[in-house]
Length: 157
Image (cartoon, rainbow, N blue to C red; front, side):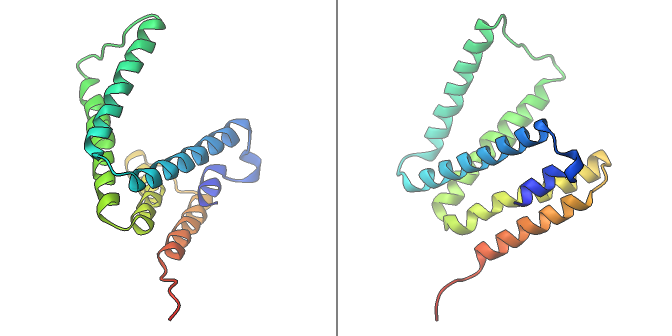
C-alpha cells in the first residue's frame, strides 16, 4: 500500500504507465519475497548458487545481444558504473542478503528490504535535488508502520 501511495502521486497523475509500473513493482516485490522464502527453506551453498545464476545471466544476455544484432562493449567511462552496479549493488548485496537470511530470523531480516524506498527517497532528494512530495511522506509512513507491525512481538503471555 505504501509503495502504491509513493508511486501513485495524486489521483490526477494516474495513467497507464504509472499503473503498469506499480503493478510490475509489486510483482517484483512478491517474486523477491517468494525467492527469499525459498532461499531460506532450501539447504545449499548460497554463494555458489548466486555465482551460477550470475554466470547464466551473463551467458544468456550475451546470446540475446548477439541474436539482436550486436554485442554491447562498454567504453572506458562506462566501466566503473557497470562494475559498481554489478559488483556492489547486485553481487555483494545479494550475497550478504543470503547470508543474513541464513543466519538470522527471516521474518525480521526481510523487513529491511522495505527500508529501501525510504533510503531511495533521501538519496534522490539529496543527490538530485528533487522535492519530496506529500504522497511520498504518507507512503513512507505506511511502509514504516507496516515494518513496525511486522516487528511487533505477537506472543501471548
